[in-house]
View 1 (cartoon, rainbow, N blue to C red):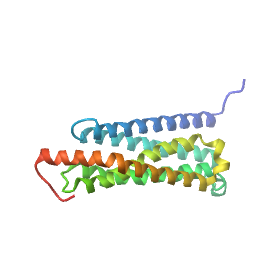
View 2: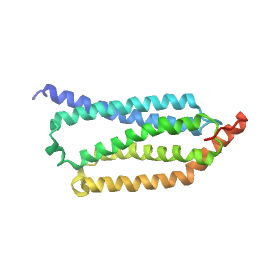
View 3: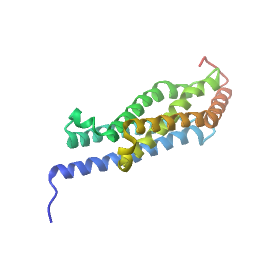
Length: 197
């Protein structure tokens, strides 16, 4: 029996950590949703903790993903250009990363303070939330999509991602936005104060 070399073991451990980070990130997103919708009020403390865990998971995904890419390709741009699945995953995780900034800088602050127009205040958190959920799930899909990579190519992967993201935003606008706006309205009523949103 042949012993695996050191790099093979390091690559295996990096992939293992990558999968764990994806699972932990997904759980953190679920806890974030729980913090928003499970109780009478938005639990900003729990939401903050869930967001911190998701941020750490995303950072670990980047580190482990780039480590595996480095081991597999040496970051050779010509070689990377021939790997549509890998390019799609990098694109989706980039969208996820930029979107997480929107969640932290725009969406969460809107949920933490009274809003004069809860319907309007719910708009961006719902859009960012839909993009986040779609991106986490689609990144997992792309990770296992080797059998369809040649058929889809980069344009197919990204077209499917765009379609799913738009459908997710539409669904969230119809189902999540009214619930979030109602929560923001109740928070306003319980605080008895309004500030421009």
